[in-house]
Length: 128
Image (cartoon, rainbow, N blue to C red; front, side, top):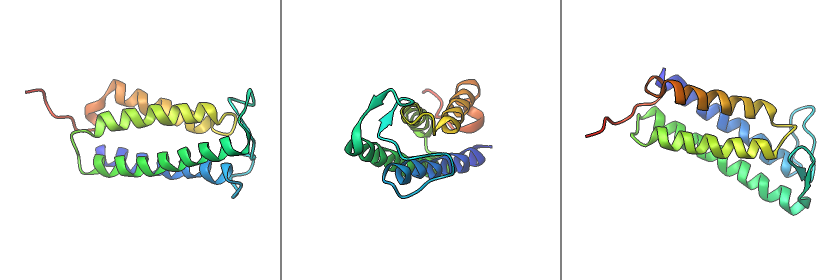
């Protein structure tokens, strides 16, 4: 189960690259359009702001792959890094609404799984 979770985290990271491609006008899935506003159109950030957010999407994508590798190797800091990264991802998805609602749901499910049964998905070092 732990390695499957690691693979899913890597795949979730790969999907974060869509935020980069959309933000930089390189395309994206049908229904996800380039926009210079965030928070479901409530705040205008302009072209430069959207490009900066795109870089954050790309960095988060890379971080997910890195954390997935740590989880795969059963690194003791995997749980803390996974939770922190999912919280960052959750924030990006909120900013990216309405195009990121699926990512928002995935983040919430993954955080819920880690909250309910962390030992099933990530190896933790027992307290000394």
